[in-house]
Length: 249
Ligand SMILES: Nc1ncnc2c1ncn2[C@@H]1O[C@H](COP(=O)(O)OP(=O)(O)OP(=O)(O)O)[C@@H](O)[C@H]1O
Image 1 (cartoon, rainbow, N blue to C red):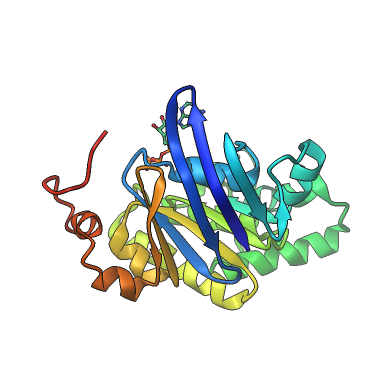
Image 2 (tube, rainbow, N blue to C red):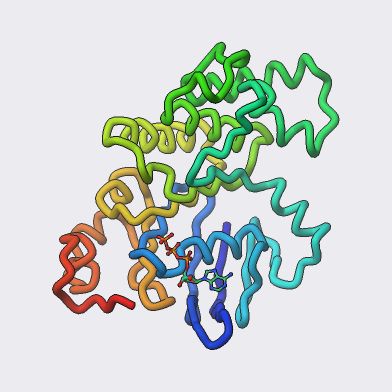
C-alpha cells in the first residue's frame, strides 16, 4: 500500500501537488495519468523518497517515510523496482551484468544463485538466453524488457514505470503493456504504478486509475468508471482536444 495523505509540494511559490490525498492499493496495477507538467514524476519521486512533501505525509508499504533519513530510505528503495523512461542500460556491460547490477550492489549472492535469478527474470520478460548479448545488439523494445528484468531482479514489492511506452511504435508499446500485465499476474503481491499520459492504454492495462489535475486527484477509480464518467475535464482528456474546460499552464 502506498498512501499520499494531504500532500502539498511546492517549489518556491509554485505549487505542483495541492493537498493530494490518494491511496494506491497493494497487488494491483495503478496508472497515474495527467497532462504534461501535472506532477506525475513529482508524485513518484515522493514514493522513492527523492522528494519530500512541503506538507502532508507519504506512506510506502505501511511505513510513514515522510521524515526518513537516508539509511531508512535506502531500505525502502530496496523494496522498489524502477523502470525509467529510457531503459538506461550500461552499453559496455553485457545483459547479464546489467540485470545482475542491483543485486551486486546490495547483496552478497553466490554466483550460481545469481545466474539462476538473472535467468528467471529474463524468462519473465520473454527474453531467455540473451545473457551474453550487449545492449547495442538489442532493439528498443528488447532494451526496455531487459530494463524491466533489472527492475525485477531483487524481487521488489513495488514497481514504478515512468512512461514505459513513450517513443515506442504501437506494436512495441502494446507488447510492453502486455508485459506489465503479465508481470503483475505472475506476482500477485506486486504493486505496480505506471505513469502515463496515454489514457486509452492506461484503461486497458490498469485496475485502478488516478488522474491528476491542478495538483489534485480529479478522479481515482476503475477503468469502467473512467470510461463512463461525464466529468468534462476527463472527457476532454479522452478526446485529446484543446477546446474544453481543461486549463493549460
Ligand atoms: N526539482 C524541481 N524544481 C522545480 N520545479 C520542478 C522540480 N521538479 C519538477 N518541477 C516542476 O513541477 C511540475 C511537474 O513536473 P513533473 O515532471 O512531475 O510533470 P509530469 O506530469 O511528470 O510531466 P511529463 O508528462 O511532461 O513528464 C513541472 O512544472 C516541473 O517544471
